[in-house]
Length: 173
Length: 169
Image 1: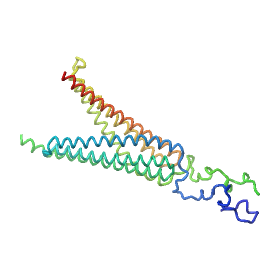
Image 2 (image 1 turned 135 degrees about the horizontal axis):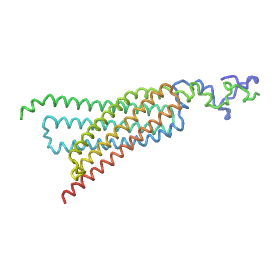
Image 3 (image 1 turned 90 degrees about the vertical axis):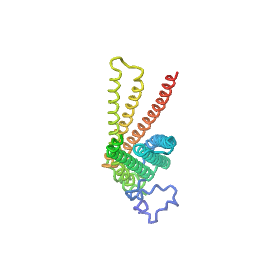
Image 4 (image 1 turned 90 degrees about the horizontal axis):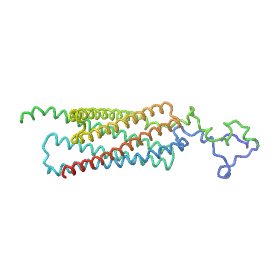
């Protein structure tokens, strides 16, 4: 502790427990480590995050429903064809749809987790909670980007495969 | 005893907390800790990538829209809009809204990623507020657009049912 008004009194300063009127220990605040996020959060941040969380939840639910519809379409397709898939485009279509359903499902779950992180931050209003929510957002963006790239990669592969097998298909006619 | 107000601020335990804790203040509030800046730094590249993919998809849908419009114009000729080109009109409307639905969030995502870079150059609480406002704008627009698309989708289903019904009777 810094020397205070007790310098001329020669007795130790009263402890915080003994003195309920003691002010907050400012030096402890000053010496807080740089990575401590306490005191960084402002009310406006909480307000903005609360507004964001609503839309994130809505989007995650809509994405999950959309994914379920894709999954349903795959199921209907399989049942309608009596599981007799002809090799070629039909199989490729189903694989792409399946991958889209998986990617969409994962993205919606990650988005929902991001929404939960945002809501936790709005309730506790601490820096670490904000950091955790932003980390979940990072996971969502990374997962979505990797998923979209996988679908696109599969799509390109399918087109290449179709072009490669085109002469053989023409021979059949 | 001493007068607390006569002490310099460094020695005054009763001074306001905000003036004492702004150690890393650069004019915009306290500097952000790494637990906030790091996830943002790592998200930025993925956001740029997704934004570019969204813009490319929007351009592709726009091309399909132009192709559809040209086909429709050839079909209708100079006689104006006929009944049988109505479905094409609806499809073009859907393509147009889809292109907008892809382009607007992509642009907002790009701006959000740009705002992250701006924040990381000077990570203060004020800049974080602006960044969170940008984030809120992106998610609000995306949510609104998705709601609009769902509405259009439901209307399209209703329209196709109505068309089938009128053809039958």
